[in-house]
Image (cartoon, rainbow, N blue to C red; front, side, top):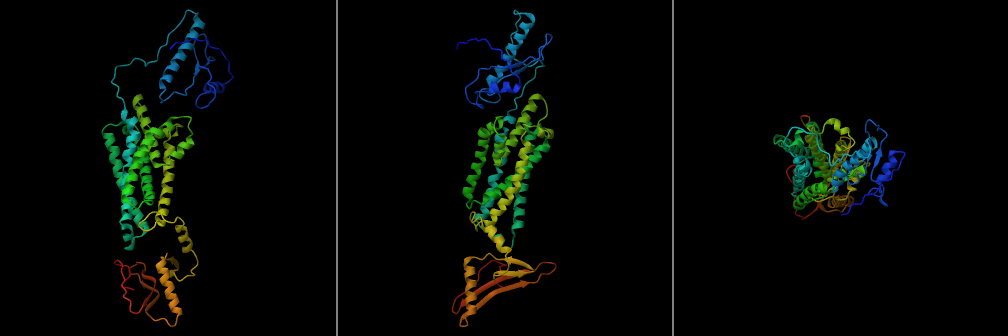
Length: 443
């Protein structure tokens, strides 16, 4: 294309903020008609003995975008123009220096190794770390689908030990998995692991694996089929990785994008993992290129470093996710998905209500509430009506039958039969079913 040279107009501005506004006017961030200001120069530090100058230019298309060649060519040309202007002013119009490009100072020849692992590590490492999520999710949903958790509860297993054992199992599995992950990456010489501080890596992976375990418990409450849970789990793994690499990453690198919205997106565990791995990869790449170290603890104070915010977000979300997971587990229907969300609060209200109904049992000065099913409540109502009927002709009437075995050797009392009401008419064949320890013989 034809190139037309025009004479530049010299304009004086009172402050750098005015220059910045005029250079950016009309671009993506500002809108409106594009201005024709090429650059701004500050000659106040220049004398006839030396050139000291600050150059302003529009960096809208600078950085890691498809238009990076503009940023690579703009600055040398601006420096070339102002340098020639200074030389002509000092030595006359016949003096001229042509600056075509900028290159490094001469050095001893070395083989440059492009650290590709640090650049592509956020995507692939996100997939590798998240592969544990479908495993844990499948395990939890399988217990629900096969009624294993219900059977363990019928044998006397409480919610507290169940959660501690399951959480501890997943935690040990995750720690072993991540330990081999970091050690193997270090042994094969990946700068992602070797350049960055190992303390930061340990803290980051420790917080994330706990968040991932809590997230698996939370998501498992919404599924009752292992096949569906497995498919959704792997879709989440690959989807969060791809969205992080081809969508979330551009928001991170755009300095004009709101940091608040980035924090909101990092609430998704997959995005928070990707952001942390992205920061480690960037520091490893720059450290390897400049012969320096990667991310250190003091780098967490850098305003462009998002690792500190990531650790805070994941820690808070870990605690909240555990609470939500426990809540949904309590309100889940037997063997199914989440039931009535208000059931948990209704249970708490009944637990602390005054003992006005016969279904409340006093034991060791504590009130215990039995959330009765509809058929149990109906049978209790039938017994109450029969007790008021003097002409009742039933073979057996049990009214709130209760049996407690005294504790021995420091063990608490064992409540074998808890408020059982039953009415059996004459001539009816009756059988009692239940697992060992349910209280059949005691009844």
